[in-house]
Amino acid sequence: MPQLAETYACAPSTERGRGILISGDPKSNSILYCNGRSVIIRYLDRPLDVQVYGEHGYPATVARYSPNGEWIASGDVSGTVRIWGTHNEFVLKNEFRVLSGRIDDIQWSPDGQRIVASGDGKGKSLVRAFMWDSGSNVGDFDGHSRRALSCAFKPTRPFRIVTCGEDFLVNFYEGPPFKFKLSHRDHSNFVNCVRFSPDGNRFISVSSDKKGILYDAKTGEKIGELSSEDGHKGSIYAISWSPDSKQVLTVSADKSAKLWDISEDNNGVVKKTLTCPGSGGVDDMLVGCLWQNDHIVTVSLGGTIYLYSANDLDKDPVQFSGHIKNVSSLIVLKSEPKFMLSSSYDGVILKWIQGIGYSGKLERKVVSQIKCFAAVDEEIVSSGFDNKVWRFSLHGDQCGDGDCIDVGNQPQDLGLALLSPDLALVSIDTGVVLLRGTKVVSTIQLGFTTTACSISPNGTEAIVGGQDGKLHVYSITGDTLKEEAVLEKHRGAITVIRYSPDVSMFASADANREAVVWDCASREVKLKNMLFHTARINCLAWSPNSSMVATGSLDTCVIVYEVEKPAASRMTIKGAHLGGVYGLAFIDDNSVVSSGEDACIRLWKVTPQ
Image 1 (spheres, rainbow, N blue to C red):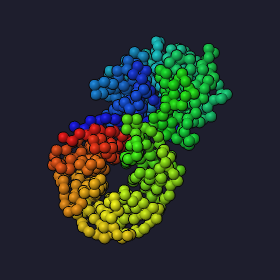
Image 2 (cartoon, rainbow, N blue to C red):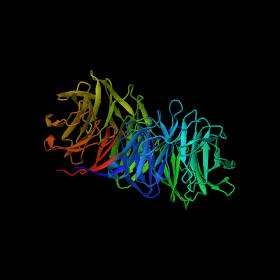
Image 3 (cartoon, helix red, strand yellow):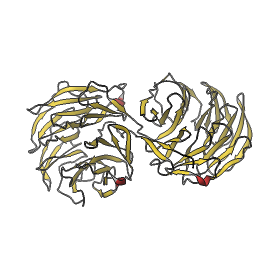
Image 4 (cartoon, rainbow, N blue to C red):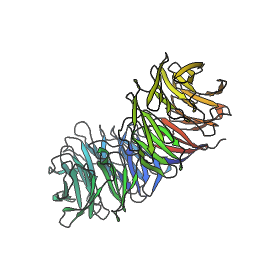
């Protein structure tokens, strides 16, 4: 049975002009963030140790550990809060429909009995506090007229709740049962985040007007603010207190994070400014932060997580990153050490090394969207949703200058001849285009709607799959294609065709959930009845020794077949990726890598039966 060996986690979902509120658990030194319908648990001292909770029916927005670290409350865009255990397979304790719109922030009371959630909704219900076990209301929160972006629970008795939002207000409630006490309108723009200090004496609010204001936690009166000299030049999105309540960390759209010393007179002065080592583009805006134990965590708009040590801030941060969107293709390059390239349709290409995980992002001069992606040794070929095919040379972590070729139609699929990689075959709606280097050698109309194509490693044979489920085999001489055979077996549009590494076989798969392995020489079916998926097959991969073929499907499963055995003795990985599997590759004869809609990449150990 295939075993999960490693998970390379996705990055947090981010949104331009909004902060994200990440949180953690100081005891286990883990952090929580959301991407799509998943809640990701990562451990700061062991980056490859990742757990994913995928039970939300809608995209998750925020998650928080309970004070004892045993439970997690997570909210989603439908206004639902789920409370689940951190152990024994994330057992569900409760699910409550709290608001009528998205939830932006959740906080637990220090005794773990009450939860407050804020966000968007109809009418007045923008903030609610409820008992964690019964869901019954504990108070009445009026006073906000627009989306409440953040809320906080005072960590010591007497309990207080403070909320802030898009109506520029900071509201203060006493309780329980909680009722409105007073409101401040000192900010002149959206108030993005509000937090109590861990010792329960003060709280601070930060806003898009670049200001931070401190208040007394017991009475709610304003007592000081963050100094404007050397302050942030952009919206401040998030804030986190140091464990000793003497410093705060802020992050901003000006691409910097600042540490402030909070003095006895309750005003803040900048102690240190942290700038990101990025390229300085929009993606380097910082949108989230967390100060946990000795770790300072900041998150950029591009999804990169920077990890600083609070004791040694001059040291370069450790960077984790991942994809934010569906990872649609995976390629293993045979260099030393072996590494993987993964691409998602928003144009991000990341590099991964087995056992280490994330090892850098490929910077391209022109960031274009990616639909099809192929690579061999030192070269990458990609095509997007325009009519262009790009070729890049690969130097370590950098891409050389790319050349693009306009092929006249949107490419549906592309194949590279592995032994002579300047030869590429691109299928467009009505036919195929042959490319040598960056020149179009010929555009051939085939007379049927093509959906997939593949070219043999030596560049003498091409197979083109059609919308009608037929496979057309062509021989390539010079720059012309001559039809050799038409193979009929599939009952749905062909989605993928791949030659085996020893070129004795090829495999094809269709949208009607069937895969077939063919013999190259006789063009007979070699392995049939591969009908175990319940939805469209998106990708397939061969093991390097050509003994196994793996298929990945929209039904979230990966199935590994051995070519010499009947299809029924397959190995299935159920629920490999939430939302479907879109990329597959073998690293060696016993390890297969998969990627999918959940933006994660997983490495499985497969042992033939």
